Length: 246
Image (cartoon, rainbow, N blue to C red; front, side, top):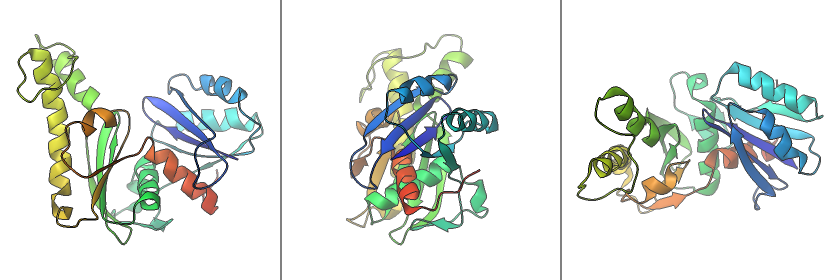
């Protein structure tokens, strides 16, 4: 069994897998600010000897996670972006600059869909990456996520609230206007980035992350909603036996 860890800016998501393609044996999440809570959640799981992780939350958290797992006899390997791996070719001018979470999501997407795609991770930030049918990552976008957008309006204006509620096609309250505007801004960027692929009937938008359900309601594209693409990519890399360790 392998423990997969997606250490994001807000939460550390984890999953335990016994095979490369079947369902997860267990999954959970803890706040990134409280990594010790991970130990309590894993205590209820069968003994583990191996883990793979990616992180965008900084070196300090990586050190903490490595120490916590080492104390429990779990060898932890870190997935880093490379020039190519697991059927994906990295199109960044400097391949190492690509975030490990985006790299893992691309690997996960490649394992789930063999046609052209855009890979959308809707978390603290929203990333929109293009993956061609030959597995080449062509480039992508990074923009503030839904919560960052509406939070920014609340923090940096005198009269706008931290908006709540559902989006509307014709917003008729301030909360509706903010929620709808933030979601449509995200959807517009995604749909525009997808446009060069729209002629191909195999093209899909693979959507994942905490705001994926909200975005799915406003995006007019052929969607494949995946609960956690990063974990799927980590699992694929781990069972391929090529994850590095530090």
